[in-house]
Length: 96
Image (tube, rainbow, N blue to C red; front, top):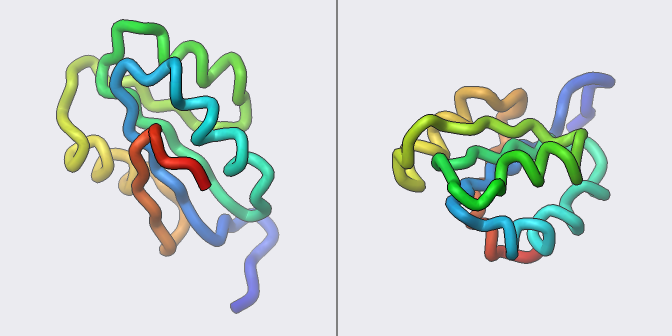
């Protein structure tokens, strides 16, 4: 399968909720992967998770929700915003 210049091969959607202490361990190995789009969907965290991810990982798309919609619905929101046909949904405690 050939990958087009601007097309991402895979979208990784990570749903967070008050995960500022663990999200970096999840994201650091992923940002080095070529042709991967990373989307963090934050379920209205109160610990600054979304702001921290946006500051520390500027290449990652952060979607901050106004309420906690749960893992499944937040994943679906990330999928709708993705740009590839290969999708992976992760919890912020997962480490690649």
